[in-house]
Image (cartoon, rainbow, N blue to C red):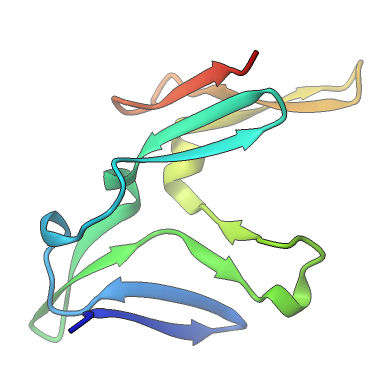
Length: 116
């Protein structure tokens, strides 16, 4: 039986594993996101959190999908705090560009690698 459950809230979907510890969830080791010419890597364990709800232990995941009917993008997700704790925006107003840099507070395993 799949213990993963998702529920909607304000046109967004949030998922968790019911009555499950995060160490028992089978997830990929890393989340890799390619933006432009860079691959941004964050260990998936930073997106999972053990929580207690009414005496029940759940594993919450901090990635959620936006309502696809309200987005022009084919796939749009909200990455939340784990992503912005790992990477910071860099504003280049002279070139009218926005980039991302690894935060000085990034946890072990966070990487930004240039794609050749």
